[in-house]
Length: 189
Image (cartoon, rainbow, N blue to C red; front, side, top):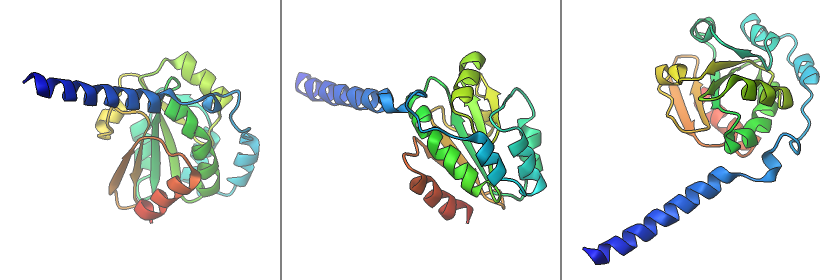
C-alpha cells in the first residue's frame, strides 16, 4: 500500500502545480499591458446591425443586474456566444482582447453576451472600464444564470447556442481569435 501512496502523491503534486501555473497567467494579461481597444470605433463598425443585436451594442460594456432570460428570449433564432468571466480570473482577463475583436468583427450576425459570475460588482465594473466590451454582461454573483444554462463552475467558460437552440460548451480560455472563430464557424454555422 505504501508503494502506491508515493506515486499517487507525486501525481497529485504535479496536477496541483500544472493547475496553479495555468491559472497564474502572466503580466501580459493585466489591463495596463493589454492592447488598446477603441469601443467607439467598434460601435461605429457595428452600426447597421439587426435590431436585436443593435440593442446589445447600445448596452456595450455595461454590467446589468437583471434581464438575462428576457434578453436570451429576444435573441431566439439567432446564434449566441455567452462568455462566463470574472475580474479575478487571469485566463478570463487574458482572453478579453479575443472577445473584443471577434465580437466587433462578427457582432452584426452573432449575439455576444457576458456573464460575470462569482465576482464583486465594483471589481467587475472597474475591469470593464479598463477592458470594455462591445456587448453587455450580466451580473451573476451566485451563478444562478450559469446553473440554468448548465455552464460548469470553471472559469472561463463559453457557451454557444446555434439558431436552432443546440449548444456547445468550451471550458477554458480562448488564446486567439482564430481559435474562437473556428469554434463559432464549427458550432454556429
